[in-house]
Length: 503
Image (cartoon, rainbow, N blue to C red):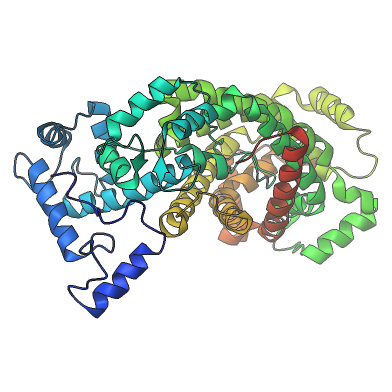
């Protein structure tokens, strides 16, 4: 029953099989050039076979597949899956969140599932001959940090090999893994790094996943070091725009309509060209401790949030990443306040970072180092959530539509996805970031009264309108594309220098 559901006319379908099948079936309903009967191109016969499988699995005949239906139905077909695996299948395909799969959800899940299986098959097929043998299984597992003997590899082969050739073709691979969850394919994790590569000046994104191979070979810390170096160069190159953003967030108003050209002119007139980089030193210094604390916290929280480190779902990654971000931000938050004060300082006001810290401590006390802490923490959720959601949506859309032989998207797709997700995340959390900056800067403005987050929101809306919550947005967006591009180029070069292996 299961073996007859999917196309069996070719051992390893070529990338353009769908287009060929579609064109041939369009010319003739029973075209000789389409021996699969429409299975590849999604013809009516194929859909009928899926419907028959659906009815077989739907043991209680209620038009939906729940975990119990799948368990009983698959057992009748000789396929045994754990309850956890079946729950993942339902969660992956359940679009309307009713706890079961209707027929359309079932079909969509299988189509998406086959796409992932094809990527795994291609990554295992080292010889690119459409078949997987024992040596290729051993090599692939060795790449993931798992060493097995040839006898063990042959045992794995025999469990999937139906025709006794001691090799697995595409059909055998697909049939064996039909209705078996596949998540976080190592190749996708490998190529689709996000927060490690791109630095736009805010370290609020959810940390990247690392493959077992990267963890066991120590490549993960080299990725982090390369990402930190890339962030330092990127932030330094875009520091003038970042300082202009801070000035506009704090000083711009209806009566003081500071523009981009006027803001740069004012900075250069007041302190010369070097003043454009005020606050950049502390901004670069905080990269290392923040990244390290965030990564360690994320790894620990993952163990509490998910049962398996390699299969965290999106919402679990968001929870773990947001909590890790909150822990990291809490640890280095005094450096955030120092960065704002140093960016806003006038010529000769402080002799350096330590002098600035001493004066703040003496005049305002320890509490001053946590001004704006609440809006900063609240901003983590919309930033990290929307950034992750947009990036994953774009990634999955590309993988479903264009990934055939590899999950590698190429530099331009990766840059475009990173830029769009970062921009959306910043846009969503920007009002909170502006309020945070104004609260951090309170004592640097003479005579400024102590205000709370809610009163500051009300004051801005009353005096400047909703537009006032987006002061400085223009230079902030202007730095996104150069920041993403620079960090990517530096990251790739540092990877080579540090000896990071890429497939």
